[in-house]
Structures are given as structure tokens and as C-alpha cells.
Amino acid sequence: AQSVTQPDIHITVSEGASLELRCNYSYGATPYLFWYVQSPGQGLQLLLKYFSGDTLVQGIKGFEAEFKRSQSSFNLRKPSVHWSDAAEYFCAVARGSQGNLIFGKGTKLSVKP
Amino acid sequence: DVKVTQSSRYLVKRTGEKVFLECVQDMDHENMFWYRQDPGLGLRLIYFSYDVKMKEKGDIPEGYSVSREKKERFSLILESASTNQTSMYLCASSKTGNTEAFFGQGTRLTVV
Image (cartoon, rainbow over all chains, first blue to last red; front, side, top):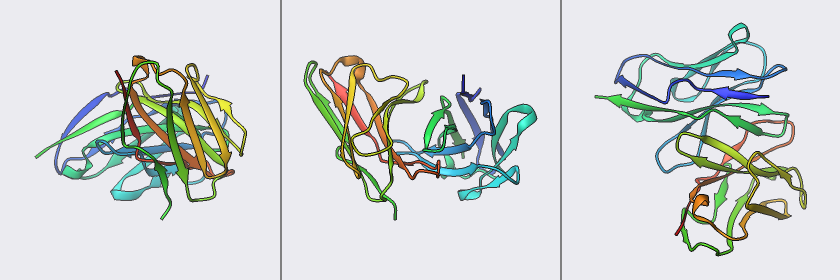
């Protein structure tokens, strides 16, 4: 069955430090992968997506993610975290081509001053 | 700017009430979705629709139904609200052939 695993429930980093959020997926075919961010009390905003091609994907707000088929991973990275990046981050894989998504359980990011 | 609008940000209802959550999108998207979000569980798909008057069960449809009479509007219905349906509900839409989904701001429903 298709699934998405985010191993880290909560991560705390210092402002200015680098960030990596982990995501592993289980999917039979070539996956369509996404990272969304949710600020408190808000809906989800798309950070970036991978459909095919270059395995390093650039997104908004300085985020990037790397698709590694051999590891079934799609980890999100940012070289220098800002206090405004504190939020919850969700990795997702598409079921089919209509936007039907399977989400991981999310990783909450806290940023220390 | 693309928009998915949910009619209420916060809602408090009593056990046994019939509850309607409304979602409207202005992007002419064919596909619409209702997710439920709970702490530690992420987002889980309740129902989705690929076209007007069409609906498909998601992963957790029990206790819910949906209605899609117009392309832009997708309603989630709790026939008889229960306390275990207290949650954040998120509506989303997407265009067929493009898996990117756009989300509304969410409705936080409390059933007392």
C-alpha cells in the first residue's frame, strides 16, 4: 500500500542553522511528491513538487528537496533557517493524477532565536 | 490569485446536529477533496469528487457524506455530529492532469 513516513515529529533548530526534514515514501510507480507547509491556524501552502527530471527541486522561501529513488526518500532542506519558518511541514505522494494525496503525519519545526 | 474558500473558520455544534461545511473554488478545477486533520495523524482523505454530481470515498468516509451540485462548490455533511468528529477540516481542489492541490484555510469544528 502507498504510504508516506516522516520519522521526526518535532525538530528544533537555531535561527541561521541548516535544516533537513526527512520523508520516506512507499509507492509502486514513479511517484509525484510534494512538500507543503502549514502555519498555525492556516491552510496548507505548496513549497515544492517533484514529478520527473532533475532530482533536486527548488521551491519557494529558499527550500529545496532531493528525490532519491534508491532510498525512497524526498528530504526537504534549507541552508539557513529563519524564525518565520517555524511551522508544520507535510510530505505527500499523489495517488493518480487528480491531486488525491497521501500525507505523512507531519514534522513540527521550532526555531530558536 | 487562486482561491479555495471555506465558509467558516470556526464552528461549534452540538452532538446529533446535522452539519454542513462548505467549500468554493474559483479556479474551474474539476477535482475537489475533503481532508480531516488531527494532531499526530496528519491529513486523511474523507471524500473526493472528480466531477459534478460524482463522489468517491476516501480513507475515512464513515459518518460523512458529500454533495457536489455545481463545479465550484463541494459540501461536506455530517449527518449526526459526534464528539469524535471534532477536528480541523480542509478542502482542496486540483485540475485534472495536474496533481498539485490547492487548499482552503480550514474549518475548525468542535462538537460538544
